[in-house]
Length: 336
Ligand code: AMP
Ligand code: MG
Image (cartoon, rainbow, N blue to C red; front, side, top):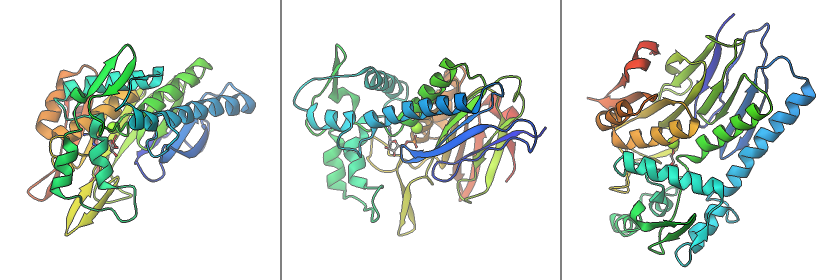
Protein backbone atom coordinates (compact mmCIF):
# COMPACT_ATOMS: atom_id res chain seq x y z
CA UNK A 1 0.00 0.00 0.00
CA UNK A 2 1.23 3.48 -0.85
CA UNK A 3 1.73 6.09 1.85
CA UNK A 4 -0.95 8.51 2.91
CA UNK A 5 0.14 11.81 1.49
CA UNK A 6 -0.39 15.13 3.21
CA UNK A 7 0.38 18.36 1.40
CA UNK A 8 1.12 21.25 3.68
CA UNK A 9 0.03 24.58 2.39
CA UNK A 10 -1.67 27.38 4.13
CA UNK A 11 -3.79 28.96 1.48
CA UNK A 12 -4.66 26.40 -1.14
CA UNK A 13 -6.02 22.95 -1.03
CA UNK A 14 -4.46 20.60 1.43
CA UNK A 15 -4.69 17.15 -0.07
CA UNK A 16 -3.85 13.75 1.12
CA UNK A 17 -4.80 10.49 -0.43
CA UNK A 18 -4.88 6.93 0.68
CA UNK A 19 -4.38 4.19 -1.83
CA UNK A 20 -6.81 3.43 -4.59
CA UNK A 21 -7.86 0.36 -2.64
CA UNK A 22 -8.58 -0.46 1.00
CA UNK A 23 -8.35 2.64 3.19
CA UNK A 24 -10.51 5.40 1.83
CA UNK A 25 -10.94 8.10 4.44
CA UNK A 26 -14.32 9.59 5.17
CA UNK A 27 -13.46 13.25 4.73
CA UNK A 28 -14.84 16.73 4.31
CA UNK A 29 -13.25 20.08 3.60
CA UNK A 30 -14.82 23.38 4.63
CA UNK A 31 -13.67 26.96 4.53
CA UNK A 32 -13.23 28.08 8.13
CA UNK A 33 -10.82 30.29 10.01
CA UNK A 34 -9.95 31.95 6.72
CA UNK A 35 -8.51 28.77 5.25
CA UNK A 36 -9.39 25.24 4.14
CA UNK A 37 -10.08 22.88 7.01
CA UNK A 38 -10.05 19.21 6.16
CA UNK A 39 -11.08 16.40 8.48
CA UNK A 40 -10.27 12.85 7.39
CA UNK A 41 -11.31 9.76 9.31
CA UNK A 42 -9.71 6.42 8.45
CA UNK A 43 -11.56 4.20 10.96
CA UNK A 44 -13.37 1.48 9.02
CA UNK A 45 -15.76 0.17 11.68
CA UNK A 46 -18.27 3.03 11.76
CA UNK A 47 -21.39 3.61 9.69
CA UNK A 48 -21.67 6.59 7.35
CA UNK A 49 -24.27 8.05 9.73
CA UNK A 50 -21.89 7.78 12.68
CA UNK A 51 -19.04 9.30 10.69
CA UNK A 52 -21.21 12.15 9.38
CA UNK A 53 -22.40 13.00 12.84
CA UNK A 54 -18.95 12.96 14.44
CA UNK A 55 -17.36 15.01 11.64
CA UNK A 56 -20.17 17.54 12.05
CA UNK A 57 -19.40 17.82 15.77
CA UNK A 58 -15.71 18.31 15.07
CA UNK A 59 -16.42 21.11 12.56
CA UNK A 60 -18.83 22.66 15.10
CA UNK A 61 -16.04 22.75 17.64
CA UNK A 62 -13.76 24.56 15.17
CA UNK A 63 -16.57 27.00 14.43
CA UNK A 64 -16.98 27.70 18.17
CA UNK A 65 -13.31 28.54 18.45
CA UNK A 66 -13.44 30.71 15.34
CA UNK A 67 -16.36 32.66 16.86
CA UNK A 68 -14.25 33.39 19.91
CA UNK A 69 -10.91 34.16 18.25
CA UNK A 70 -11.72 35.84 14.91
CA UNK A 71 -10.68 39.48 15.22
CA UNK A 72 -12.18 40.29 11.79
CA UNK A 73 -15.63 39.55 13.24
CA UNK A 74 -16.93 42.46 15.36
CA UNK A 75 -19.21 40.12 17.32
CA UNK A 76 -16.40 37.74 18.40
CA UNK A 77 -15.15 37.56 21.97
CA UNK A 78 -11.68 38.76 20.97
CA UNK A 79 -13.21 41.85 19.33
CA UNK A 80 -15.10 42.59 22.55
CA UNK A 81 -11.87 42.26 24.53
CA UNK A 82 -10.07 44.53 22.05
CA UNK A 83 -12.83 47.15 22.32
CA UNK A 84 -13.32 47.12 26.08
CA UNK A 85 -10.33 45.69 27.97
CA UNK A 86 -8.65 49.09 27.87
CA UNK A 87 -11.40 50.35 30.19
CA UNK A 88 -12.40 47.41 32.35
CA UNK A 89 -11.36 43.90 33.32
CA UNK A 90 -13.11 41.32 31.13
CA UNK A 91 -13.86 37.83 32.46
CA UNK A 92 -12.28 35.22 30.19
CA UNK A 93 -13.94 32.01 29.04
CA UNK A 94 -11.90 28.82 29.25
CA UNK A 95 -10.81 28.91 25.58
CA UNK A 96 -9.57 32.50 25.74
CA UNK A 97 -7.93 31.95 29.12
CA UNK A 98 -6.06 28.92 27.85
CA UNK A 99 -4.96 30.70 24.66
CA UNK A 100 -3.69 33.76 26.52
CA UNK A 101 -1.85 31.78 29.19
CA UNK A 102 -0.27 29.52 26.53
CA UNK A 103 0.70 32.57 24.48
CA UNK A 104 2.27 34.15 27.55
CA UNK A 105 4.45 31.08 27.84
CA UNK A 106 5.53 31.22 24.17
CA UNK A 107 6.24 34.91 24.61
CA UNK A 108 8.51 34.12 27.54
CA UNK A 109 10.42 31.23 26.03
CA UNK A 110 10.91 33.08 22.73
CA UNK A 111 12.22 36.19 24.45
CA UNK A 112 9.31 38.25 23.10
CA UNK A 113 9.48 37.01 19.46
CA UNK A 114 6.00 35.48 19.79
CA UNK A 115 3.61 38.18 20.92
CA UNK A 116 -0.20 38.20 20.64
CA UNK A 117 -0.22 41.94 21.45
CA UNK A 118 1.11 42.47 17.91
CA UNK A 119 -2.51 43.32 16.93
CA UNK A 120 -2.20 47.11 16.91
CA UNK A 121 0.81 46.95 14.57
CA UNK A 122 -0.72 44.27 12.35
CA UNK A 123 -3.76 46.49 11.78
CA UNK A 124 -1.43 49.04 10.18
CA UNK A 125 -0.26 46.52 7.59
CA UNK A 126 -3.73 45.58 6.27
CA UNK A 127 -2.58 42.29 4.70
CA UNK A 128 -6.19 41.14 4.41
CA UNK A 129 -7.13 44.02 2.11
CA UNK A 130 -6.84 44.19 -1.65
CA UNK A 131 -4.51 47.18 -1.64
CA UNK A 132 -2.15 46.62 1.27
CA UNK A 133 0.07 49.51 2.25
CA UNK A 134 3.42 50.02 3.90
CA UNK A 135 2.82 51.99 7.08
CA UNK A 136 5.12 54.90 7.86
CA UNK A 137 7.85 54.56 10.51
CA UNK A 138 6.18 57.09 12.78
CA UNK A 139 2.91 55.15 12.85
CA UNK A 140 4.72 51.90 13.52
CA UNK A 141 6.72 53.47 16.35
CA UNK A 142 3.54 54.87 17.91
CA UNK A 143 1.79 51.50 17.82
CA UNK A 144 4.83 49.60 19.12
CA UNK A 145 4.11 51.19 22.50
CA UNK A 146 1.00 49.01 22.66
CA UNK A 147 2.98 45.84 21.95
CA UNK A 148 4.33 43.69 24.78
CA UNK A 149 2.89 41.28 27.32
CA UNK A 150 3.77 43.73 30.08
CA UNK A 151 0.71 45.65 28.80
CA UNK A 152 -1.62 42.81 29.81
CA UNK A 153 -3.04 42.50 33.31
CA UNK A 154 -4.21 38.91 33.88
CA UNK A 155 -5.90 38.44 37.23
CA UNK A 156 -8.41 35.86 38.47
CA UNK A 157 -9.18 34.78 34.90
CA UNK A 158 -9.88 38.33 33.77
CA UNK A 159 -7.90 40.49 31.37
CA UNK A 160 -7.34 44.22 31.34
CA UNK A 161 -5.07 46.27 29.07
CA UNK A 162 -2.71 48.70 30.73
CA UNK A 163 -2.91 50.94 27.64
CA UNK A 164 -6.14 51.64 25.71
CA UNK A 165 -4.48 50.99 22.31
CA UNK A 166 -3.49 47.35 23.01
CA UNK A 167 -4.98 44.85 20.53
CA UNK A 168 -4.79 41.06 20.77
CA UNK A 169 -4.26 38.94 17.66
CA UNK A 170 -4.49 35.16 18.00
CA UNK A 171 -3.73 34.44 14.32
CA UNK A 172 -0.51 32.63 15.22
CA UNK A 173 -2.06 30.07 17.53
CA UNK A 174 -5.86 29.82 17.12
CA UNK A 175 -5.82 27.38 14.18
CA UNK A 176 -3.54 24.97 16.03
CA UNK A 177 -5.76 25.18 19.09
CA UNK A 178 -8.86 24.50 16.95
CA UNK A 179 -7.17 21.45 15.40
CA UNK A 180 -6.42 20.03 18.87
CA UNK A 181 -10.00 20.67 19.97
CA UNK A 182 -11.38 18.92 16.87
CA UNK A 183 -9.10 15.91 17.43
CA UNK A 184 -10.39 15.75 21.01
CA UNK A 185 -13.97 15.60 19.72
CA UNK A 186 -13.02 12.74 17.39
CA UNK A 187 -11.30 10.86 20.22
CA UNK A 188 -14.29 11.38 22.51
CA UNK A 189 -16.34 9.58 19.86
CA UNK A 190 -13.97 6.61 19.67
CA UNK A 191 -12.24 7.62 16.45
CA UNK A 192 -8.70 6.23 16.50
CA UNK A 193 -7.28 7.06 13.07
CA UNK A 194 -7.80 10.54 11.67
CA UNK A 195 -6.29 13.78 10.56
CA UNK A 196 -7.40 17.38 10.96
CA UNK A 197 -5.66 19.94 8.80
CA UNK A 198 -6.45 23.65 9.11
CA UNK A 199 -4.43 25.39 6.40
CA UNK A 200 -1.19 23.61 7.12
CA UNK A 201 -1.74 23.21 10.86
CA UNK A 202 -2.33 19.51 11.14
CA UNK A 203 -2.61 16.77 13.70
CA UNK A 204 -2.86 13.06 13.09
CA UNK A 205 -3.93 10.22 15.32
CA UNK A 206 -2.99 6.80 14.10
CA UNK A 207 -3.96 3.15 14.42
CA UNK A 208 -2.47 0.05 12.79
CA UNK A 209 -4.44 0.93 9.66
CA UNK A 210 -2.15 3.78 8.63
CA UNK A 211 0.99 3.20 10.69
CA UNK A 212 4.06 3.87 8.56
CA UNK A 213 1.98 5.17 5.66
CA UNK A 214 1.57 8.86 6.39
CA UNK A 215 3.88 11.40 4.81
CA UNK A 216 4.03 15.10 5.55
CA UNK A 217 5.09 17.17 2.55
CA UNK A 218 6.67 20.59 2.94
CA UNK A 219 5.91 23.14 0.25
CA UNK A 220 8.70 24.73 -1.68
CA UNK A 221 8.36 28.31 -0.43
CA UNK A 222 9.39 29.85 -3.76
CA UNK A 223 7.75 27.51 -6.30
CA UNK A 224 4.08 27.03 -5.66
CA UNK A 225 2.77 23.53 -6.31
CA UNK A 226 6.17 21.95 -5.75
CA UNK A 227 7.64 20.53 -2.58
CA UNK A 228 10.95 20.80 -0.76
CA UNK A 229 10.62 17.31 0.64
CA UNK A 230 8.74 15.07 3.01
CA UNK A 231 9.00 13.06 6.20
CA UNK A 232 7.00 10.20 7.68
CA UNK A 233 4.79 10.80 10.68
CA UNK A 234 2.27 8.51 12.35
CA UNK A 235 0.97 10.52 15.32
CA UNK A 236 1.70 14.13 16.05
CA UNK A 237 1.28 17.65 14.82
CA UNK A 238 2.94 19.80 12.22
CA UNK A 239 2.64 23.49 11.39
CA UNK A 240 4.40 25.68 8.87
CA UNK A 241 4.84 29.45 9.02
CA UNK A 242 5.99 31.01 5.77
CA UNK A 243 6.64 34.37 4.18
CA UNK A 244 4.68 33.16 1.11
CA UNK A 245 1.35 32.74 2.88
CA UNK A 246 0.15 36.34 3.07
CA UNK A 247 2.37 38.87 1.45
CA UNK A 248 2.71 41.62 -1.10
CA UNK A 249 5.72 42.82 -3.05
CA UNK A 250 6.58 46.50 -3.34
CA UNK A 251 9.73 47.78 -5.09
CA UNK A 252 10.97 44.16 -5.24
CA UNK A 253 10.70 43.80 -1.47
CA UNK A 254 8.44 41.11 0.01
CA UNK A 255 6.25 42.30 2.89
CA UNK A 256 4.59 39.44 4.74
CA UNK A 257 2.37 38.86 7.77
CA UNK A 258 4.78 37.52 10.40
CA UNK A 259 5.97 40.57 12.24
CA UNK A 260 8.94 41.13 14.49
CA UNK A 261 7.48 42.68 17.67
CA UNK A 262 10.73 44.59 18.20
CA UNK A 263 10.51 46.49 14.90
CA UNK A 264 6.87 46.17 13.80
CA UNK A 265 8.19 45.08 10.37
CA UNK A 266 8.03 41.64 8.71
CA UNK A 267 10.58 39.29 10.27
CA UNK A 268 13.39 38.85 7.78
CA UNK A 269 15.45 35.89 8.93
CA UNK A 270 13.44 32.91 7.67
CA UNK A 271 11.49 31.92 4.59
CA UNK A 272 9.62 29.00 6.11
CA UNK A 273 9.60 27.18 9.43
CA UNK A 274 8.00 23.77 9.93
CA UNK A 275 7.57 22.52 13.48
CA UNK A 276 6.69 19.01 14.54
CA UNK A 277 5.33 18.70 18.08
CA UNK A 278 2.91 16.67 20.16
CA UNK A 279 0.05 19.17 19.95
CA UNK A 280 -1.09 21.39 17.09
CA UNK A 281 -1.23 24.37 19.46
CA UNK A 282 2.45 23.91 20.24
CA UNK A 283 3.40 23.42 16.57
CA UNK A 284 1.44 26.52 15.52
CA UNK A 285 2.78 28.78 18.28
CA UNK A 286 6.36 27.64 17.88
CA UNK A 287 6.43 27.88 14.08
CA UNK A 288 5.64 31.58 14.37
CA UNK A 289 8.07 32.09 17.27
CA UNK A 290 10.96 30.34 15.51
CA UNK A 291 10.22 32.22 12.27
CA UNK A 292 10.73 35.52 14.09
CA UNK A 293 13.78 34.31 16.02
CA UNK A 294 15.54 33.17 12.85
CA UNK A 295 17.57 30.03 12.04
CA UNK A 296 20.17 30.33 14.82
CA UNK A 297 18.19 31.42 17.85
CA UNK A 298 15.10 29.59 16.59
CA UNK A 299 16.93 26.26 16.40
CA UNK A 300 18.41 26.87 19.86
CA UNK A 301 14.86 27.21 21.20
CA UNK A 302 13.71 24.05 19.39
CA UNK A 303 16.65 22.09 20.81
CA UNK A 304 15.72 23.16 24.34
CA UNK A 305 12.15 21.84 24.02
CA UNK A 306 11.57 18.10 24.43
CA UNK A 307 9.58 16.44 21.62
CA UNK A 308 9.86 19.46 19.32
CA UNK A 309 11.56 19.24 15.90
CA UNK A 310 12.01 21.82 13.15
CA UNK A 311 12.94 22.33 9.54
CA UNK A 312 13.95 25.90 8.84
CA UNK A 313 14.35 27.22 5.29
CA UNK A 314 16.14 30.54 4.91
CA UNK A 315 18.07 32.59 2.38
CA UNK A 316 21.84 32.67 2.27
CA UNK A 317 23.73 34.53 -0.47
CA UNK A 318 20.56 34.69 -2.55
CA UNK A 319 19.95 30.93 -2.30
CA UNK A 320 17.47 28.93 -0.24
CA UNK A 321 19.13 26.68 2.31
CA UNK A 322 17.62 24.57 5.06
CA UNK A 323 18.53 23.13 8.39
CA UNK A 324 16.75 20.60 10.55
CA UNK A 325 16.85 19.47 14.16
CA UNK A 326 18.47 16.09 14.83
CA UNK A 327 15.45 13.75 14.51
CA UNK A 328 13.91 15.45 11.49
CA UNK A 329 17.29 15.61 9.79
CA UNK A 330 17.32 11.81 9.82
CA UNK A 331 13.75 11.58 8.49
CA UNK A 332 13.50 14.49 6.03
CA UNK A 333 13.78 13.45 2.38
CA UNK A 334 14.69 16.49 0.38
CA UNK A 335 13.45 16.48 -3.19
CA UNK A 336 14.29 19.91 -4.65
P1 AMP B 1 1.37 31.82 11.52
O1 AMP B 1 0.94 31.64 10.10
O2 AMP B 1 0.89 30.76 12.45
O3 AMP B 1 2.83 32.03 11.65
O4 AMP B 1 0.65 33.13 12.09
C1 AMP B 1 0.81 34.37 11.49
C2 AMP B 1 -0.22 35.31 12.06
O5 AMP B 1 0.09 35.55 13.44
C3 AMP B 1 -0.22 36.69 11.42
O6 AMP B 1 -1.12 36.75 10.34
C4 AMP B 1 -0.65 37.58 12.58
O7 AMP B 1 -2.05 37.51 12.73
C5 AMP B 1 -0.02 36.93 13.78
N1 AMP B 1 1.36 37.37 14.07
C6 AMP B 1 2.23 38.06 13.26
N2 AMP B 1 3.41 38.23 13.87
C7 AMP B 1 3.31 37.66 15.11
C8 AMP B 1 4.20 37.51 16.21
N3 AMP B 1 5.44 37.98 16.18
N4 AMP B 1 3.73 36.86 17.32
C9 AMP B 1 2.46 36.37 17.37
N5 AMP B 1 1.58 36.50 16.36
C10 AMP B 1 1.99 37.11 15.24
MG1 MG C 1 1.65 29.89 14.13
